[in-house]
Image 1: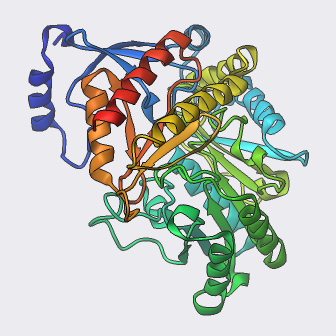
Image 2 (image 1 turned 45 degrees about the vertical axis):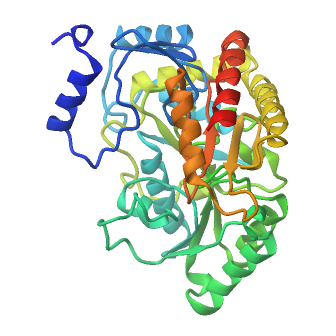
Length: 427
């Protein structure tokens, strides 16, 4: 049936009848088309997209170069399974990723389909390299919806409810958060406390963290915390894994968030904006670590799909040609400045923070400083009614995060900031 002939209400009724409630859906309208930073629903209403498919569209909806690359690959072949019949584009993309990720040591890269799949394989690689079982992650972190991904994720609702038991030998420590009273020393002491009370450090294969927590609230790891983790990893032979699924490809004002730090990870996971809307993820890291699994230990039927690989190669070209890393940093500075101006007149704004274009505003109750999820919800709803898509995040749901495409035109950014300011004032 042609969706153009259907209303949002009709589609919503069909959705509720045909799909399970466990697939939570934020919007009650249905996309018809999209271009760069804008999308239109089946009834013709326009929205400015500050969600970007949850940080997937740093290069915008339907970038012409990506479309051309995908079309060209479709004329050749769409699938062989790389593990059966390989293709040159996979190798070329691996070479490109090895060159642009932080660190000048020898690297290798393997491709998969989703961010959770990349995280799962990073754990496999770490265990194969070290011969150890345990993994340490952090509260507030999000690492995917697979069983290991959920075990690593430091947030129960909605990700873990009713799905246990989870894989063992996974331990959590608090993530540093100055706003909520957790210093870098507190967080590092908690990791050391795990070594005393829960797990022998010589049984730990890896410590995994997001350099900037995504679902957790856009909290950036302080430099001293990252240095402390690197020192602990070096002391005990543990691998440091940076989950850059959400932070990668220009979102933080660097191509990768780890470039903000003066230490290097052993492995990096990436996905989301890697292929600009096509399903592709990767694990990249030290060559000797990546080579630990035996042949056949890594892979997947769709891993490194040729259409997605073609799109990813185009993404890297667009990022360089349009200088999107620098543009993202400028847009983020502009957004933070406007939010900072609002802070003086909106007491519910507890903090404005972010690296590059990975910006968030946290709402708290005036006086008590307690999380104010209701205010965040009202801001989100007011913006949506006026044509601006926003996402909330944070352990308490009191943070609004901004994930606009880095290609957003200045005029559209101006319009969006006007809607946002009105929503924050009127919530």
